[in-house]
Image (cartoon, rainbow, N blue to C red; front, side, top):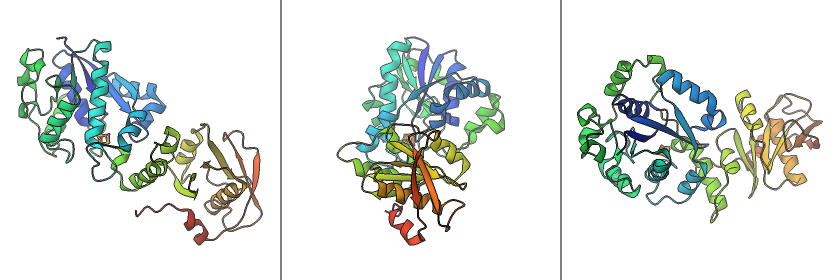
Length: 342
Ligand code: SF4
């Protein structure tokens, strides 16, 4: 067995500490950062910047890994169900660990490490769920959870003395006291200690509702990456059964939407007054483009005034098509808003 492992690294405090606990024992760690539009998307968009940040702040070299197709597959039909929202945590963890297992040989690593803490998360960090995850991922005996190792049977690397079990922890439950003390001991600046929110959008109620409706729309198939990305930003409308309109709500969202230059996305905005950028995806009929223009007008500076025109095109830099933007009332807009109470 080699003194080298793959760690599931989310950038959260527990995963940082799991890596540090291994590094402290001179174990070589490949910190794999699985990313999707629902978590770690910034990393996918700008891996170099994030590599530098994690190296400089925590002394951890991260290996970003696109997990989007996996998460689409897992969300569409999780064997072990969802958590409170659309988060299929048990299946998601199993899939990540299977991916990590498949990388062991290539990385010349012998075991896998996670920052899981017994009893910290209601769905995936109960003892029975942790056992199930270990078994189903095919990592029996070679999955190490350094933060709570002392509550678990010794893994093979511990039995073989590759890892000194005495230097692993016995953290349990939702408290963070042990973890914060350890972070400070490792010299991590208090301002660089990540907050506990986690940041997975599948645990967000409103976003989960949008994502759920997208998955329903594509059944028995699955949505593609561009379809789900439209659920993580902006105001969403359905112009007909298959046509989505997303209107940005801020400068940041304008920039985000502008980056989504993908086949099938059409950008639209009001030409002569400041207002939000929007994306239409689906049936680009004249009627749908007119409705999109009307809704865009409603959320921009030209609201309520007649005579405006919208421009549209496949790229925010080349919007050469034009369509009238009629003035419409609030009730009209509501007809197309997706019901977030379902
Ligand atoms: S919170 Fe999100 S990223 Fe974490 S295990 Fe659950 S679904 Fe996966």
